[in-house]
Image (tube, rainbow, N blue to C red):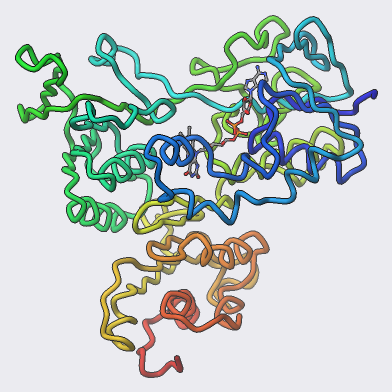
Amino acid sequence: MQSDLIILGAGQAGMSAARSALKRGLKVTLIDVQMPAPGGKFDLQAGLAKSMVQMAGTELWASSNAALEKNPLVDEILTHQYLEFVEGWGRVVKSNAVEVGRKIYSARRLIIATGSEAILSSGSIISDLPHFTEDFLPPITDQLQGVVVVGGDEYACLVAQLFGTMGIATELVVPGQSLLEDLESEVSEILERSFAELGVGVYLGKDLSSAAKDPTTGDLINVQLSDSTVLKASAIVATGTRRGKTHGLGLEAIGCATDERGFVKVSNRLQSSRSGIFCAGDVTGKLLGPSSAREMGRIAVSQAFDRSPVTRFDPMLITRVIPLTPPIATLGVTERDALRKSVRIAKVAFAELAASSTGTQTAGFVKLLSAPRPLMRGIGGGKLIGATIVGPSAGEMISELALAMRRNLPVGAIVENVRPTSNYNFAVELAARQLLENKKPSLNALAF
Ligand SMILES: Cc1cc2nc3c(=O)[nH]c(=O)nc-3n(C[C@H](O)[C@H](O)[C@H](O)COP(=O)(O)OP(=O)(O)OC[C@H]3O[C@@H](n4cnc5c(N)ncnc54)[C@H](O)[C@@H]3O)c2cc1C
């Protein structure tokens, strides 16, 4: 089969690119070291959840991903008559050719979608000790006496919460002043409470100052923090430093530039410095995560074949869903980013609603930000520029807001939208109404 497109990497970005290309009637050669599992392993939210389920022998994470696991789209792609799947490690030899084993595959265009991998930050004091990252977690055995997780991003929180949930003594050492520092500040407060309930110690604004094997026990590591606190653990998991998986791909030899962390340098149209090569997903270093990888896969195909002047990757439109307890979903800017005076901010805590209807308390909130639209200004509440939902079904609830933002709809459209009445959903409507009316409406004035 003479291909139109080679896609190197069949993860989230590669599969999305393949689907987009096949829908256009293009012939695709998809290369990966491993054949995607029938049924769709690529829609499981990847490594962490899966490896933890395997390690722990629990259904804890599987249940939250079960709906995604049976994705018919993956089978549809892999069995498509215009798709050739090549199993093996690929190396780019020309802007339109990839070598796998001894065979060279060529096409009109190439999309690189090889993902990213965890590394230890340079000079890390744990490099001489047995250490783990979010990609390779310590196996759960009787010997695992405790875990120290270092980092404050979503990987750190996910790893700490999961070990904590399994009853393993877990401490989370956070170099920054809060958890998930790039999100709304209230998110950290809620997570800190959740960790406290779980018995996971959280040490904000601390770093490791030393780590060494305990001379008395041999198995344990003494971990000293910058404030002299000493923690004992049998494993340290360092999270949050990743690099593009481009080592050995041969990109330098063909003039395709990467940065110091191995991420391929691309424009917002996902064009690399080498004509004919586009990139998608984590390997671009633009915005790591499955949603952005899928969006980039689609855009890379569009750019590779249409060169549309309007299609470009906009990280502000990407929904981030972090499957913690409580779940977190975000989109666009945060209150901290929104420095413009004309930005309106609305927040509804679930506890407010729950107390008024059922008397129960639920941690979490919906926060929305809007800004004036060109010409229409603040009419209709302006346009949505940011959303954060923390609480049950956050990932589902944010979809409506993502569509509104992508389509530039006025906030009034969110208010008008008829949605199933639950306290959680109602909070979205109420927050949007605050933006529309530019004040906080009373709960009694609204029909449940
Ligand atoms: C441990 C872990 C847990 C995560 N959990 C979550 C989560 O719960 N929620 C969330 O939102 N995000 C999560 N993520 C992030 C998410 O999985 C990634 O951001 C997403 O998978 C990126 O998609 P991608 O297509 O760019 O890369 P990947 O999905 O990693 O796909 C890259 C593919 O390229 C292949 N490949 C690489 N090099 C070559 C080569 N030379 N030749 C052939 N094939 C090659 C690999 O085999 C792989 O299949 C997690 C990430 C990790 C590491």
